[in-house]
Image 1 (cartoon, helix red, strand yellow):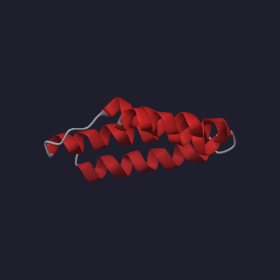
Image 2 (image 1 turned 180 degrees about the vertical axis):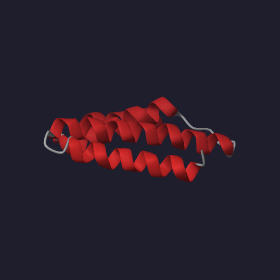
Image 3 (image 1 turned 120 degrees about the vertical axis):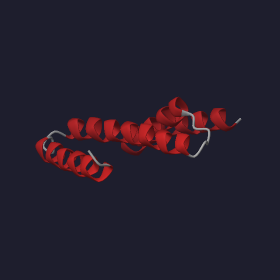
Image 4 (image 1 turned 90 degrees about the horizontal axis):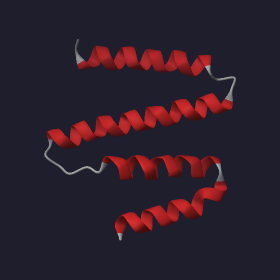
Length: 88
């Protein structure tokens, strides 16, 4: 199966799933978070093909915290500390 076909099928499944869970906000949060984690793993594959270093777990942790900081503003300080620790 070609990459284009995979992406079309994945996109169609994503849209159908989003329409299905649109009524419960917590479901949408979980779905967006799972899609973001899967996109990070896809980005790792792209980096690997170009022989670039990619840190998966720090990216997922900082990405998840930044996503939650948008929803829950109390977590912004934790996100700030994670970024400082990662780049220090």
